[in-house]
Image: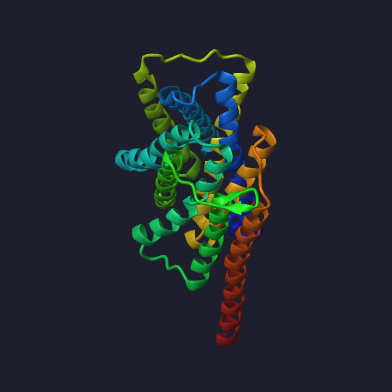
Amino acid sequence: MTAERWFTSTTGIMVSSVAATILWGSALPFIKLSYYHLHIASNDPFAQWLFAGYRFVLAGLLLMVLARLLQRKGIKPQRVKASSLLVLALLQTFLQYVFVYAALGQGSGMTMSIIAGSVSLFQLLAVRWMMKTEQLSLRKWLGLLLGFGGIAVMGMASGNQLHITFGVAELLMLLSALSGGVGNVLARREAAIEPVISLTGRQMFWGGLGLVIIGCASGHPFPFAWDGIGLLMLLYLALLSAGAFALWNTVMKYNEVGRVSMYLFLTPPFGVILSAVWLGERASLWSLVALVLVTASIMLVNRGRRAEQIANGKAARKQT
């Protein structure tokens, strides 16, 4: 089976998207574990950005090496323009994770995981703005509302009560989701020119290098006391980023944004579960309600898509 057939099949989209969201869901609580282990203070954004820079430079290098290994001998792959690459690196890595790491230093892993799900909303809005050819049907908007409703329930839930809290950490995470959503759509457009693994690796490397530069602004380029566990944590986060972004950018390349965006709503439930397991943060019963709403949004969009395909197939047979 070719890559295109896998990433456009129902099974391929589901498996790849769920795998990417599990990886992303594990990232936020695991970053907080890394903070604890490496003694990165919540009020030290420069150390947080430097750690993020190490992570993405390493992830980018891993993907670039993989792209080179997969490259057919004697065939030089196409590359996007340097300006387009830098814009993508700015949005999908640099700005997104400047906000993420600063937010995680102030908020809980569970809350940050919940707000991260809003990237799906921004992704759909971005595709309407940047790619006029893709239409969002009523079914897709209903799916979006269901999914976002699930995120909202999780965001307001505390025990058996619902309340709204919104501070600096939540605002930073929302800005991260905005940057990530626009970056995802831009990556989809540029993937028509350059192979996904190469494109993702190069933008991660340059975005990560930018994070390293601002992280060093405090005057301490090597502030961490590394040990074996700390290095394994960094390696896991790098592999996580490389795998999740490569999978998701490939899914985006071969599919309509409106069809696959709903899967991003799975990131918060996975993040909540893993925050509860790894960080000991308490999850409420409202998380189950949110998960049901998110699952319903995915089913609505994909069942509707299947019905359209069957109808189109019947119409084609009648014409013949």
